[in-house]
Structure formats: C-alpha cells, structure tokens
Amino acid sequence: MTNPEAQQQARQPVPEAEPQAESQERSHTRPEARSEDPSEATAGVPSDAEAQVRAEADTEAETEATARLERAVRAAEQALIEFEIAVETFRIEVENFSRLHHQRLGPMYSRLDELDALIAEAVAARTGDPEDIRKAREARGLVLPMPKVEELFHGWLDSDGLSPEGAAMLTERPVQPPPRVRPSEEARRIYRELARKAHPDLAEDGAERERRGEFIVRVNAAYAAGDEERLKALAEEWAAGPPPPERRWSRSEELYARLEWLAERKEMLAQVAAELESGAIGAMIKMAPEDPDGLLDEIAEQLLAKVAEKENQLAELVR
Image 1 (tube, one colour):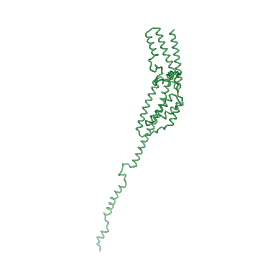
Image 2 (cartoon, one colour):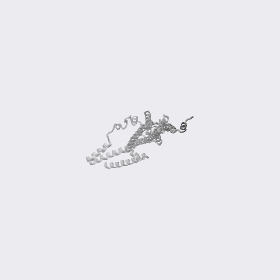
Image 3 (spheres, one colour):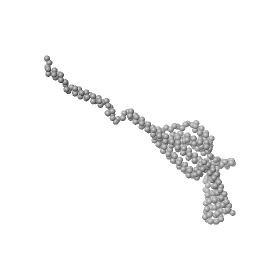
C-alpha cells in the first residue's frame, strides 16, 4: 500500500521550480540580447566606409582648389603676355618715331640753335655789355657741344665698327638715309600671334624657355624692321617646330610661386611702360597715336615758322 501523505505531497506543485527556470532563462537571454546590437559598443567610432567617404571628399576639395589655382595662373600668364606685347609694341614705336623725329626735325633744331647763337653774338657786338657777351658765349656753347667719339667720326664709327654710312662714303657710293620703319597691319598681326604662341613665359623648363627666348628675339628684330616677309617665314618655322608643352601642375605651392613671379614681372613691365610714356617721344606719340606722321608735319611747320622769325630778327640786327 502506498503512503497517503506521500501521494498528497506528490500532487502538490513545486513552487520554486518555475521561477528558477524563468530566472535561468533570463540569465541566458540577457547576454545574447546585448550581443545582438553592436552599435552600442562601437558608438562614436567611424566605419571604414565613412572614413573612405571623408577621404574622397577631402581629395575632391583639394583637386578643386588646385584647379582654381591653375585657372588663375593661366589667366595671369595670358594677361602678362598681352601686357608685354603692348609694352614692346610701344617701345618699338617710340624707337621708330625717335629715329624719324631726329631725321626730319634734327636739322631744324640745329638751325634754331645756330640762329640763337648768331642773334646773341650780334647783340653782344652792338652793346659790348659783359652780360650780353656771356649770353653769346653760352648760346654758342649749345651749338658746339663737346663731341663724342661717334661725332668725331661724323657717325661713321660706332660700337659695331664702321657704319653703313661710313662704308658708303669710303666706297664713294651714295649714302642712303635711314629707312622709314612703320610695320604694316599684317606685320603687327603676325607679330602679336607669334608673341602669344612662342612667349618664353609659357615654358616650363630652362631649355624650352631658352629656345623660345632666342626665337622671340628674332621675331622682335623682324618686327622692328617692319619685315613682313620675314615674320611670315618665322610663323611657318614656329608652326613646323615642336608644339608647346602642356602645362601640368602637381603642387599648389608651385602655383602660388608662379603667381608671385608673374606679379613681379608685371610690376617691372609697368615701370618700363611708365618710363616710355614719360619721355618726350612717348608723350608725343600719346598725343597722336593714330597719326604720328601728321604730328611730325605739324611740328615741322612750327619749327619752320620759328626759323623764319629768327632769320628776320638776325637780319635786322646785322644791317
């Protein structure tokens, strides 16, 4: 027979069994729940994808900044070349106009100086005043200045040796006057085009810069002589030569240094242009840039009128 108390105890539930099992289940599930959310453990640490995106953004920003610098350098280079062309063109115009001015008006100025000296001497001879005598000596001194070596040889000898005029005199050939140099519009167009294409400032290495420099010297000489055919030949020579090297910038520091050099070069050219414009010949060209020959005609008429006036004054004094 079975024990009734034992059967009764067997029928009663065990109160601690279910809570203990639930507690054990919770104790096992909590660590697993924490491991399912890795963002809580890695909060604030960027992933590899985010770091790559940021690096690409930085590279893109640096590339854009370099591209802006490169555009600025190229614009500054083109502006400097145009400025150099303008300064060189004006320098050649000043040189040519000075030559024509001296050739045409020089004898008139010399005649006026001679007339001033003759008038002062005539006045001193009439009055005998020491002050008038002093003025006469000063006027004569302006007519007969201390000659230079070239003047002693009447322009036959210069730093390059015997001049063409001197050789013509020795060989009894007729002396040719200095040629009138006024480049044609086509010559100016070719000159500007060559200066823009072959300018030394566009070279990146020393050898290319030297090659361009020598070529531009020949271009300037042909333009100064107004030799249109020679300029055309030089244009063909440049077209047949090696193409200009493409510019590649690798570092922003080089671009900044390039901009600084361009600024210094432009400042130097501005000083040259200011000196040309402040000179007597430059100021005259600025007065009539479209018709310098007409300005020469006008000045010649004025000088001839002064010569006639002084000749009349001298005639009155020596009667």
